Image (cartoon, rainbow over all chains, first blue to last red; front, side, top):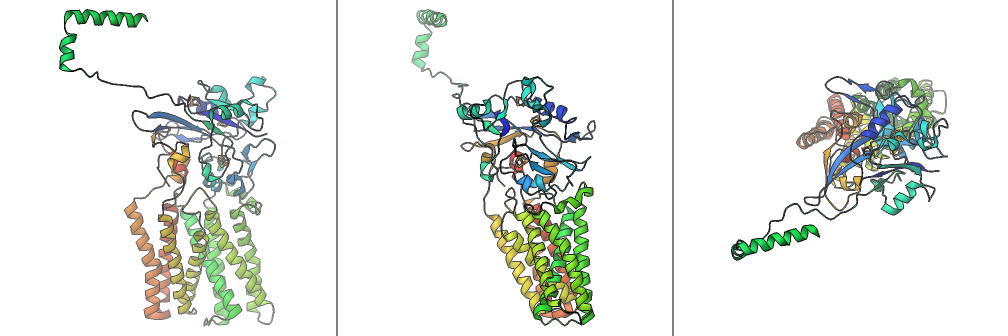
Length: 242
Length: 298
Ligand code: SF4
Ligand code: SF4
Ligand code: SF4
């Protein structure tokens, strides 16, 4: 199995609901708590497994806002695992999930240096590294109804921009989405082979926002005659009917 | 990258210690014309071990959870950080037995132990460099020049300590200063070349401009603290100049004009220069995660 997420950059509205749901679920999960520093002060900060950033792609009038949620990509060639000196970071052979054993981590930050995607954050309270667990404590939980055995970020997304599944299965939802919508990896040149894929925004034609009608002086004079005004009115009405 | 003082002190002091002990090993093996008395040699080996220990202790200061530091020896097969730790720890018993054979000149085997100590010192220095050089995420480090410079600068400081102690060989020290300076200049040229991922490949929009609108968090976080460290370009250039002047030009000039009489100021200047160099090594490194925070390139 190769479990991971597909994120649709076309439909993501950038509401941060997935990040909030992630924090809520995981703070009492296997890697929890996700400590907050100065939460009610002037400089609140803390550990998050999922962060959404907002970009503008291309120039006016073809510009588009892109909301890019990023969490651990559960890379196939995860250098964050190989560089870890203590063996706290590991990749599960059975489903490809990359996890951190909180009891072994010594908080050296080295794995976070090796991660190109900013997925790992040190928790100052526990002194250990933390990251997305792919909700490992949900997806196999037999006490949950089967439809809910999914990462909480996927369940929460109000615009259905997130999909979870097995990339090794060609008929899974994630494999189909990647096939049909040309799903791609972020920063592939780093060579980490990230499992998570992103669906590019669809490309509708640019909306014409303003196009002044070109009217010559003669046309203007002709249009102002009463007969021409009536003709124009009739033409408009007919157009509206059709 | 955020330049952590603990890591700077680690690479500076233990680097110098490994350089010093390497030269003492080489002298035992091939006689480099050092004017060492028997007890002088013992003292210098002890100084090297103290420097190494100070450095290693400093390095543990940057661990957020030092209780688990003992586990760091376990991933020897994949992690350069682990390898560095293993070589560093192995060096102690070997160097101590070597010290004993030096002290008790009747005991044989000094040469073999010197060779072993030398290999371990080089291996540790190389591993320290590889900790940084193996990271594909930081192009300023991901080069063979990184371990080369760690070894050259360690050797340079070692030879300067030897000269300062009155035992060293000025020609060797000046040669090391020259080699280290050359290595560093090639490195600065190398990192000046544009390369690496851009904000476009980071997000997968390679046919259009990409601009950051909002990072999604109001205050800093771990990522911005650790990787977002940035220094003004002009200040970086000035610091480079200062590190080259103090690290290489002043020690070389002092040694060339005044010989071993100027050993101590040359050594102090060398340490100051390399300290700034190490600080720059971190401050100039641009992690690719900065692309997601709006940098156009690394
Ligand atoms: S995204 Fe980062 S933390 Fe996750 S597997 Fe890849 S390299 Fe490791
Ligand atoms: S899979 Fe779970 S842990 Fe990972 S980002 Fe989604 S909610 Fe967070
Ligand atoms: S909840 Fe869905 S739409 Fe909102 S930011 Fe997350 S992925 Fe995007």
